[in-house]
Length: 578
Image 1 (cartoon, rainbow, N blue to C red):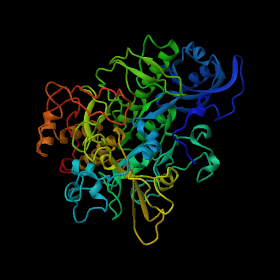
Image 2 (cartoon, one colour):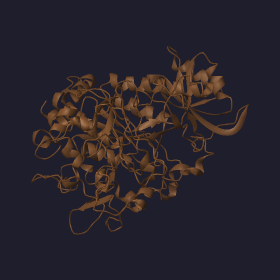
Image 3 (tube, rainbow, N blue to C red):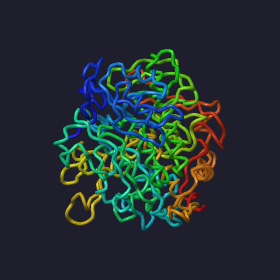
Image 4 (tube, helix red, strand yellow):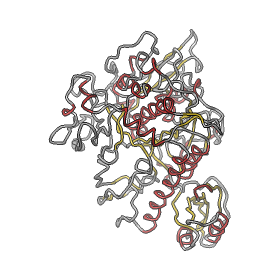
């Protein structure tokens, strides 16, 4: 049904061009284009709308609280006309947001190429009352989120609301259903057949999906890491009794539109969401630069608008009590010293160009946006994952994200269990040929746990191994939810439970385990993982081309704070003991 790997058919698609009929105007080429337009400072919404009309656009949606609109137009000169309007501050194509987990789109190829192996993760000793698949959750053991550690102290307050800004949450999954908040969940997207697949082949035969489904899989995986329930089935999350809110801003295909993402930020602030997970970067630019000489003026304006509108929305959410946590990205780049970007603009496919003059003034959004806590990824040995971005300025904390390249030269190398196991929609797993219709795994990347004698979607939990900073970020989000549970309070007026985001960040960093203590507990020297002189070699992957990329990375800083681990590895037990 869903082909999330093949996007070539949409090269000619103008984002949003099929969503509405817009009358042709003078200077029109007949194509409908969609933009995010930023209002000028102090300009009323009425005046801004009038300016948009004058420039040849039509407002189809608006976020008045931060002064921006979604606009559709057939005018080929809309951008220049809009920028001539004094009431308008910026214009960006309502392009798409890509995952910080790029390997997700290649998962089918990985399934086919993965050597069928034991898939065993590093051994974990299960507590008596732990969930059935606890032995596969090396990630939870690493951060002390287990039955005899953090769960024995606190599993989280159900009044803590965790927003998952992603492809959705499969509320029918038996490990997610107990903690799913249907009332607050929202879907800000509409499926687009040319990139998401034919709507008549959807389970609901509609492009208008309800807010309790996930036809992309990524969001459900993230949600399970945060709060898979303690119910005697499958796995458990970091904070297994907090509430999950689906803030779907992502297309089934794994892309997100800018406007819908900004809507999710503002909605979180307006509806009492306590912490959000953001495992994406704002497309089409990996690095958004305000005045890169290799970009046209229109491209520079677009990137400025992406930065400014995103920061406005992030500021709004933060000021309304939302703790903002994001994946750091999977480009193996020192974000404090970036130099190269060869994937932007990355939509439509084939439009990318090489920019070899990237500087630290260029930003990945939302990872480097205002108030955002950026999380790097670790493998099961505690080593920085080979793909994870890093940086002394950007890394706030670190968390398990998986690393299939650990244990090079051993049978364990490149096995499924070196990744992170979490919840996954059953129907999607069947479509992707990860499991059979009878709930039998077809690859070591998938695990099924059932209750009762008759396997069904309501009695079987499906779980998939993935790796990425997308998987690291929700571990930090789960710990933040435990911190909010510990230090939060009820508002005497609204009755809502929450905590100041600044206090949450301070506690998240304060309870993280410093690198030297983290490795000492494993009988290791932290300098073997962040060495002097400051480099770290990642083993080459024999499946890569003849000339694999250089996996050396500069580890700056000391045990208290460094570019690989930030303030340390998040710790669920320390958070519950607050």
